[in-house]
Image (tube, rainbow, N blue to C red; front, top):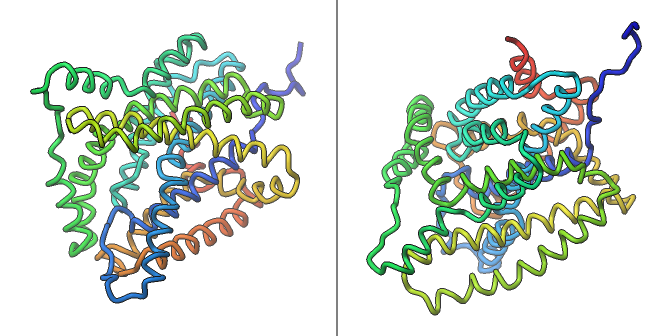
Length: 391
């Protein structure tokens, strides 16, 4: 029988995932902007008005409470979700995507290295390294994936360190001496030329970034979020009919968040052992951020599916989300050109930096709307896709 006219089996694009992706990248640019893209150099604020000092602190604390680790978590979870869509599309065509995804991860590593030339805090290299967990686990049963993903989220290294510190008062957690690497990157950002900054960013900068990810539990957290993103794709939880299930997720997140937050804030008054407190803070801090992240996701899903006005507003983020990689990489290029010595070396306070971040987002958003009117992929997304299937 002829196959002419038969539709190729594939998943339809999930618009709400693009909304979430756009929301996450928007939040990331705002955070990176007030951080000066990992260049913590700010002008003297002792002479500025008290109201501006108050505003600076409110913006810093407010943005990090709302988006710190949450935007990153959403972005990581959607990476696992996208892998499932790609893998399942190929499976429905009778093909195995796993080996090609390994090649795709290598390409992501190369793109991440390009991003790292400009911005030491980029995450694509980490994604490329941790992403192999998806290849290794994607054929496991849902039950075992839940177990494995939960194990990663619970930071097994931190639990081990807490137990050791509780049993042995002389135990000391292993620390990576990343201070010299951060010192080298700061020196390049402060006074280096572009070529000097490039060299430092690609070596000391990458080592510092990966060391930070290890010491702050990002490696295990990323692996867990990748797996749960893949599970969301497998179960179809981003579809409208699963909104009630997200209501239960929201309730659980709220119930877990408040006691964990309370314990996190008060335990320091009773426990002084830093070898216990350091992993404890990483573990409980990551869990409280995870709860807040689930609240954000649930809020976006309900707003998108249940409220027409908010749905129309959130839909404006769809083209921005579809070009998330292009936006993420170009943020680092623009930010380093604004704040680092090789560029404008702009000395700006937190409030002004936020306004710059908003401007960068608006320019990117407008560009995405224009670009996607006649195209299906952003520039880097297109290159990544073509290179994936080039061999």
